[in-house]
Image (cartoon, rainbow, N blue to C red; front, side, top):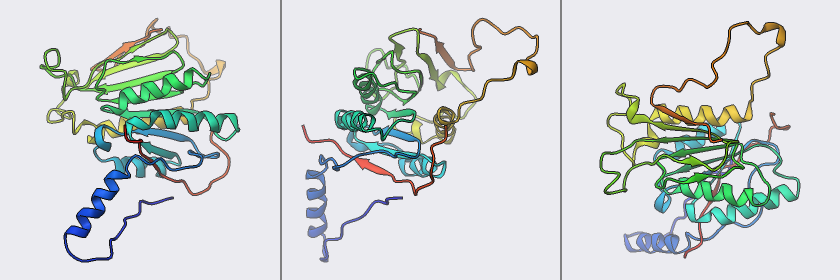
Length: 266
């Protein structure tokens, strides 16, 4: 696992540290060269929010790594570079497994845009997990399934800021779930807002479960074990969930890497 490294100025006092922080900010747009993702482990591409904000991101990454996945973390403006690296990895036969993309806040529309870019090259996105999307985006048809977690706010229609939005599906092939936690009124999300919802332990559990489900699909039930009980024509939504039906474990066990990507300055 590649851990974050901290640069020391080697000098005492306040100003050297301030200068080092300014230099770090100026170079924040650099994108690490070389391929991204893992050949042998499930890949999760995580798009941060504005200025790289994502509450409890370190804990989220650690849980992904502990589950055997390889998270690649990027600023929202880096979605074009991420798309090119994924496309290049597919063309070279490196990244052939399922693709899961996670987006928080302004990183959610970036995740949708990333999915669009991949779709234009014939690449499917197996799962899109969005939290507090800042836009009512349209999920492209190359996305197989999307879970959008958000908390609606009473001011959203007049001031569409610091609130999540529902999304829609471009086609009938995408299984889309809009989950407004405000409707799931059991006290777990009462004090959460746009800046904290992604750090809620119940939300993080749900995100992790959705991601891992993609990499560990359930085997079809044998015909002999099926009962005669009829199934409903449409799935029953969970409390607070709005369902819009618009429409293998990799080999080897190398040490996973957390890859940090940042966006070029505009």
